[in-house]
Structures are given as structure tokens and as C-alpha cells.
Amino acid sequence: MSPADDWSGRLGYVDDGLDRRSYLRDDPAFLAAETADPAARSCLFAGEAPILRRNSPVEAFMPLVAADGLGASGERIYLGHTASGPRFAASAPATLAEGLRGRSDLMVADLRQLAFDGGVDRAALGLLGVAKSMLSWHARHRFCANCGTMTVVVCGGWKRVCPACAAEHFPRVDPVAIMLVGAGADCLLGRQARFAPGMWSCLAGFIEPGETIEAAVRREVQEEAGVAVGAVRYLGAQPWPFPSSLMIGCRAEALARDIVVDRLELEDARWFSRAEARAMLDRTHPDGLMTPPPPAIAHHLIRAFVDEA
Amino acid sequence: MSPADDWSGRLGYVDDGLDRRSYLRDDPAFLAAETADPAARSCLFAGEAPILRRNSPVEAFMPLVAADGLGASGERIYLGHTASGPRFAASAPATLAEGLRGRSDLMVADLRQLAFDGGVDRAALGLLGVAKSMLSWHARHRFCANCGTMTVVVCGGWKRVCPACAAEHFPRVDPVAIMLVGAGADCLLGRQARFAPGMWSCLAGFIEPGETIEAAVRREVQEEAGVAVGAVRYLGAQPWPFPSSLMIGCRAEALARDIVVDRLELEDARWFSRAEARAMLDRTHPDGLMTPPPPAIAHHLIRAFVDEA
Image 1 (cartoon, each protein chain N blue to C red):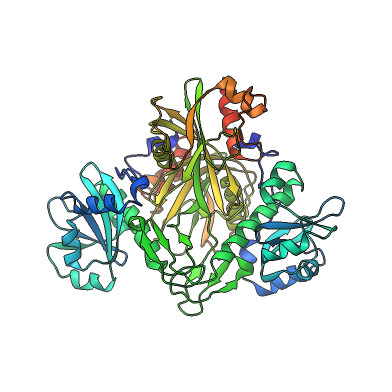
Image 2 (image 1 turned 180 degrees about the vertical axis):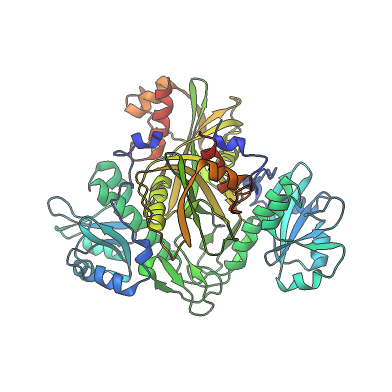
């Protein structure tokens, strides 16, 4: 069993219960049947905000006509099939959210907050994550990067094709290395200026063309904190829909302890003892310092380090 | 030590010896100094083909003026700094390759073949891999996907910016799950129609938005071979510059043995015993069946399974 198997049930944006049926996406008859299925439901994003219905429980997915009625526009994305039927994603302009805020039957939500406060069930959160990544990609990829022509959506939203040059474009997933760097009994955490006060987390960075996961871990830690890294071990991964990253979580061992912080990337970075990190995970640190909460993979990477002792 | 550490020295397109200096890419003065460095060298691709100089040894990198003299056009990409100085990548139209084939001092090479025949040293092969991924991305991403305007290259080629809508675009890395599926003493290998005769390899597929690595492994094996997978374990990764994938290699355990081949994806798939797989790795199989050679991660995933016994 991989360490990440222990995290399921707590990590956010996973366990979506989705059978993607990717091999059927190019079949218009299949998509039409899924759309016509009485059990079909769609989520709706107004810009970045999921629009939820205040039923009991709160609903992230609604009949397709309900989403259309609320102002869904643009392409409807086929996410796949769940035990409760077909699932789609729809979007509306961000400006729609303002108008919907006044409605007592609706909730204009925040996808990060939903992961932290459990406002929807785990499967719905996972589906909203897939939807958010897909819709964000479509929103920023309406034109052919090869020739500049407006592209056409095919395969239920899983491909855009250029009518001029025939180039095919697929939704993007950006792999990110995120790592808990340890040195003996201490671990290295950093703070970005945009973090909430008192929040410290794992270092992380996009994996570049030509890099292995392990090489990206070493480069990022060297660049951001000036710390050389030896052994690197994969622990688990998490899709992160802001907009569409794949967080690849690793345990790394430092070869030295001196830190030189890259102040463009980080506000600060320093070593924390296991006891201090444990208090930050449990939100009992005397100075109010804390780690990200359990929906984020950083929490589990830090927890795994603390539990090594 | 991760299993992949054993593979270094044999896996291709890694160990590029590159200090990417990514934090300096946005500094024009730094890039100008690197360009003016007498030790600066550039590779040159004519379309997909690296152009090598038949010196002793064969050179994949040449002075910048030499690359320009051979017909380099378009943006010059800054790869980073090596122990031998700054390294760049340049491209020319594919049509240039035809003209250069007649020159006795040059070799119009094939990047896959170079990995297999060792035509350049490991570090040069790694650098050519980075160059290939970057140049392929630029070739297909000259226009803003957000608004269709021609974009401008900045940061030595590591970003394109839209002059109309200010959208920023970064080189793409597509994570791919590649897995050795085992069932007791047997492993599952597949054949794509485009493979060389007798070649069998690991199943693989692109990781989609919203998926973990492990979920992608399970979906791909289910879709392509109809086999349910239980435990999944990460073994190692390889950048694959055709055009810019990150192959994430896993060991997966099948929950059942019945196979239903998706004939759109695979020509065939079947179980092989450890003894048969070993013969295929060693190219001693009586029927001439074989695995991919050591530069490909599939070779090492299969080897790791064979060595489990």
C-alpha cells in the first residue's frame, strides 16, 4: 500500500467516483444519450465560483435544464458517468455570480473553501475539481495556439480542433513537485507572501520540460532555499484544480542545513522541529503557526514526516 | 534510494547536467551575457531532426554563429548553464534538413535513434531532449490560446506573452502514467499497431485533469485491457521529448486475469511469464519478441518486475 492510500478520505479533489468512459467521448450518439438520461446532472460555475443549490443536503449538481435556466452558456463538458448517472459541467460569465448572490435558494461558493469546510460531499468535491480544471482550460483556450483561429469543441469537451489548420488541442495538466525536505529531526517549510498569517507549507514548483520528478525537487529546493537535496522518495499525488495542476508529493532529504531564501519566490523559509510541526498540524502551536489543512497534500507530507519519529 | 536511481546511466533524456538558472531567465542582461559568453553553444533542429557536426566526437552543440550560419531562424531558447558553459537551442524549418543531408561535415539525426545507438553522450542527449520539448512547444504555440493574437517570446523562451490580452503561456509538460501490471508471476504487456514487429511494451496513457497518478493507472489498464488493478506503486519517471511528456512509471497489481483488449488503442495485449519477459529484455526470445531498449522507462519497469522473483 502506498502512503497516499492512508490519505484518502481526507485529501480533497479526489475520489470523484467517476467512470470517465473516455473511449466513448468521440461518439456523438453516446453523448446524446448521456445528455438525454433523466439522471443527468450538471454543475455550474460562474467564473471561478461553483453555484450550489441550498437543498438538504446542498447540491452541487442539478438537472441540465436547471443549469441552463440559471444562465449556463458556452460548451457543456461531459465529465463521465457516476453511480447516480451522467455528470456534466457548465459555465457562465463571472458577472452572473453577482446577480445570483441575492437568491436565497442558491449559494455562490468558493472551491477552495468547499474543500476546507466540507460544504459538499467528497465525491461532489472531486467532480467539481474535474469540472473546474476543464472549464478553466476552455476559458483560456478558445483559439488555436498553432494558427490563431477560433477552435471547435469536440469529444464532449475533451478536445478542441482547429477548423483552419486541423491542430488538435487537449486539456492541460501541469505536473508540480511538492516536497517535504527533512534534515534529521527537522523539516524545511516556507511561506509565500500570499499565505494567510502564520501559515507555513512545503516548497513546490512546476516540473519543467526535460526534468524527472526527482530532478525538479532538487532544483526547486536549491533555487528557493539554497539547500542541496539527496534522496527523494515519492509519497502520493493530488489533482489541484487551480487551474489544473497535478501535485506530486515527495519526501526529500537535505544534504546541508544552511538556507538562502529566494525572496522573489518566498517570504521566508526555515527549519521546524518535529514537535513544532506536529503542533502546527494540530493547530496548537503557541505562536499560532500552522500548516495547510488536511484537504491539501502538503498537510499529509508534513504529517508523514512527523510520524516518521 | 528509489528504484529509479538504479536506472540512471541507462535511461535516456536524463542527466543533462543543466543548471537551469530559472530565476535569472527574466533578466535580459543575464541572457545577453550568457549569449555573449565565448563558451556558449547551441543545438540546431531542422524540424524534428537534430543537426550534428561530424567532428570527433560528434557534436550536438556548436557556436551560436555556426547554428545561425546553418539556417537557424526564429527564437533562440536559453536552456541553462552547464560545466562547459551556456547552452541554447535553435530551430530551422524541416525543409532545411534535405539540403543539409548532402554535407559530409553534418549529420541529420533522429532523436529517438540517438538514444538507442549512443550517437551522442548522455549529457548531450539530455540537453537535446530539453531542446526538442521546448522547440516543439514554440512551433505549435505561436498564437495566444486566449485571444488568437501572435504572442511574444520572453524569458529566454520559457514564456510567451500576448501583447493584446496580456495572457502568459508556459511550456507544456504532459504527465503520462506508464505501468507494469503484474498478476503473480506474469506481467501484462501490450502492442500498438505502430510498434516494430515483435515489440511489446507497458500500457500507458495521459493523466487527465482531476486524476491522481494511481487513478490514471487504474483507468488506463481498465480501458485498454479490461483488467482491474489494485495496488499501485511509483517506481520512477522519465521526460520523453515526443513532444513533451513526463512518463511516470508505476508497478501495478492486477485483481483479475481476464483481458478485453480495446482494439482502437492496442493491437493486442496478453500475459507474459517472467522467463519470457526476461528473454524479451535480453533479446533472446525464441520468437524474436522483445521489449523496448534501456533508454525507455518501459524497459526498466519490465526489468524491475522480472527481478522481483
